[in-house]
Length: 479
Figure 1 (tube, rainbow, N blue to C red):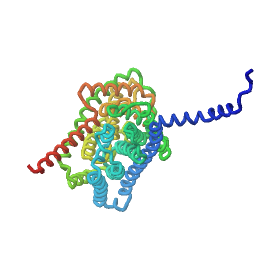
Figure 2 (figure 1 turned 90 degrees about the vertical axis):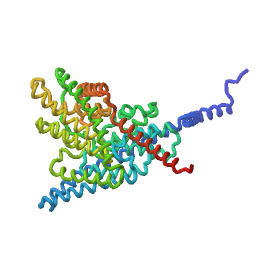
Figure 3 (figure 1 turned 180 degrees about the vertical axis):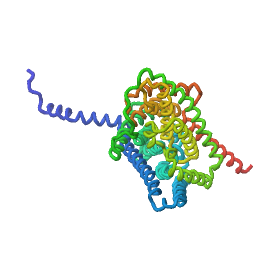
Figure 4 (figure 1 turned 90 degrees about the horizontal axis):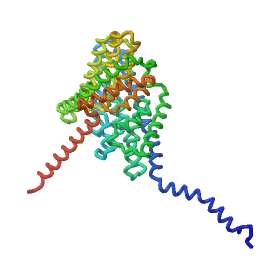
C-alpha cells in the first residue's frame, strides 16, 4: 500500500529546486542578454555626460555673450567710443582665434557642425578621437560662439554627445560593434535633447535624419530614448523646464488659411535647396582662401571675429545664433522692409561664419532665418487678407520647421523640435502642411540633405589625401 506521506528528503529536494530556480533563470537571462543590458545601462551614463556637457556649454555661451557686451557698454571704455571699438574688435578677435587655433592644431574634425562626423563614425568611415574632440569642441566652441559669430550650439552638443558615447564604450571596454554604434547614436540624441530642451526631437533626429547610418532595433531605439530622457532631465535640473523660446501660445489656425502655409512651405523648399548649395560653395571659397594652412586659417577666423565685435555693439540682430531674437522677430516689431533686410544680412553672416570652418552649428541660424521669412510672409498675408484672423507669429513658427525640413530633410524632427521649443502644440496641422510642402519641393528640385553633402565632401577629401599619400610613398621607393 502506498504511503500518503512523501519522503522528507524528497520534499527538501523539491524546495531546494524551487528556491534555486529563479536564480538560474536570472543567470540564464543575464548570460544571454548581457550585452544589451550593458548597452542600456551605458546609454543612461551617456545621457548624463551629454546632458552635462550640453548644458554647461549652453551656460558658458550665454554667460560670455551677455557679459562681454554689457561690460563694454557700461565700463569706462564707453566714455571714449574709439577705445570701446578697439576693445570690442580685439576681444572678439581673440575669442575667435582661440577657437580656430584649437580646431586646426588639435582636432580638425571638430570644425563646423560636427554632425556629419558622428554620421560618418556610425557608418565606420570616420574616426572618433573623443580625448581630443571633447575639449576642442567645448572650449573652441565657447570661443567661436562667444565672439558673436552666427553659429549654433546644437552641432557641438550633438558631436560632443556622440563622442561621450564612444568614450563610455572605450572606458567600459565594450567590444560589441553594434553596442558601440548604439552608444554613438544615443550620445547624438542626448546632445540634441540638451541643446534645445527637446527630448523627443533628439530621438527622432537620430531615427529620421541619421536613418542611413542608424541601425534600428529594439535595443538601439531603447538606448537612444534612455539617453535623450536622462540628458533632458539633467538639462532641466540645471536650467529649468521652461520652453527654450518664449513665444505666445497660438490657437489653431483657421482652416481657410491653411493654403497659405502650403504656399510658404513651397517657397521654403526652393530656398532650402539654394541655401544648401550656398553653404557648400562658401566652404569651398574659404578653403581656397586659407588653403588649410594654420596661419591663414586662424587669421581668417580673427578677421571674422573682429567684425562681429563691432556688430555686437550696434546691430546685434545679425549676430549670434539668433535664438534669443526669435521672439522679437516674430512679435511684429519690424516692418516688411526691415524683416527682409535682417533676413538678407543674417543669411550672409550665417554662410560666412559656418563656411569658414568655425566650431559651431547651423541649426539655430536656420531657425532664425525661418522665423524672419515666415514673419515677413505672415505680415504680408495679414495685410492682404485681414479677415482671415491669422497672426504673423503662426507663420514664424511654421517657417522654422519648414526651413529645417528643406535643408536637413527631416520633416518630423523639424515639427517636433519647433513644438518642443515653443510649446505651440495647436499649430501641429500648419506645421505638417508647411514642412511637407517644403520637403516635396526640395526633393523635386534635386536637393540633397545638408549633412549628407557635408559628409560626402569630407570623405572625398579624405580619399584624395590617401591617394596623395600613396602616390608620394610610391615615388619615394627606389626603382
